[in-house]
Amino acid sequence: MNIQCLGAAGTVTGSCYLLAVGEYRVLVDCGMFQGSGEMEERNREPFVFEPGEIDAVVLTHAHIDHSGLIPKLCRDGFRGRVICTHSTAELCSILLPDSGHIQEMEAERRSRKKKGTRVARHIRPLYTEEDGRRCLSRFFGIDYDEMHEIVPGVQVRLQDAGHVLGSAIIELWVEVEEGKTCKVVFSGDLGSRGQAIVKDPTWIAEADYVFIESTYGDRLHDHKIDRRQRLSSIVQRVQEEGGTIIVPSFAVGRTQEIIYELTELLAHGTIKPFPVFIDSPLAVEATRVFRNHEDVFDEESQVYIQRGTDPLAFPGLVFVETKEESQRLNMVTSGAMIISSSGMCEAGRIKHHLRHHIWRPKSHLVFVGYQAPGTLGRRIVDGARHVRIFGRDYKVAAHVHMIEGFSAHADRGGLLDWLGGFIQKPKKVIVVHGEPDVRKIFAQTIEEELGFETVIPERFDSIELLV
Ligand SMILES: [Zn+2]
Image (cartoon, helix red, strand yellow):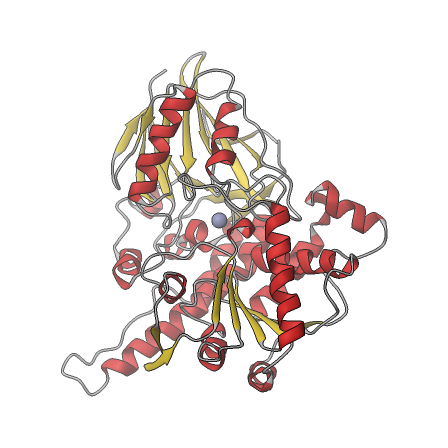
């Protein structure tokens, strides 16, 4: 019985683990690699297993770096069930077809680029929008805290990970032999305590093996109060001096959190009402899915709902859907906020907004999430003076802000606290889902502060599970 790390080992994307128990094969996540071109090429590699031989997939949450290769898996022969929470299934129903659409556009763009050259050829998309839609019939939603047998001898229970709507920590009980069980826990992406809308991550008391993410395992975030203050001071500054605020944001999770923070700031009179445009059809749909699942919101948001107010709406909030409406935003040069995806500025409408604002000294670019190495977002955050957008060079004259407190990932303190919740010492803590240096630092911190034995697996390494 072992677990092989197929992704998110030495990277923060491409989360995928293969559990082999006797004749059964179960995947935990089947995520897409994101970031540089070289990283994305990995998505095109054939699976190292036979998709038809996988019995089930257990999915932590809907983000593409955890779910994005499910359409490819299904197209290549997977016939089992994808087990996840109900809200994750619903979010995937918008995210995966959208991801397929992006793949088709990208393939078309690359084919066009090669046209007329000696290497002219038609580039096939990684998968299509139709593949993204077709795989949805494999999804099987379960409730948090519900025991479920995925294959004979393997039970699963999902607990709230507090990272994004529907996100889950996976608890797996594997029967090794009569009466002997090994428990493996996957943290998935763990949210920060006090994060808006979603609940705090659930404490887990025991496990033999724990796979823990380490995206921010080397640093502490701004506090929730700081992030609200930082956001409000940028808005106040723009309301006094003019200029536009551009927020590259992930459509699912982060965008809704910012809407929630703005609702709070407006309710307390900290900022004056002003136009806020959500320029992403995906974010508009995702916000609708959030509203469908208010029952899993945290207490703070429940108070709003009980008062009869919507925590995800305020006067001045405009959902931009069509391309024409989006283009009209180019005329907005002052006193507004535009929230658009993608969150790392690699694709989507955000690139058009950056093109119109990055060179304006009065504009403010506000980053609210992790920026992977090799992305346009990372270059801007790292202080590039010039960047290329759509093949043209632009001077970075706008103010650049990074508000880390918005991160949907727990910081070092949050991760250690959560690990500290294990009453029994796990046999091993496997540190995954982080950049190489960060994993090393975090693993060392775990050993020093908690005395747990750690492992830092490389891609394709296997962890033997012993009882
Ligand atoms: Zn995530």
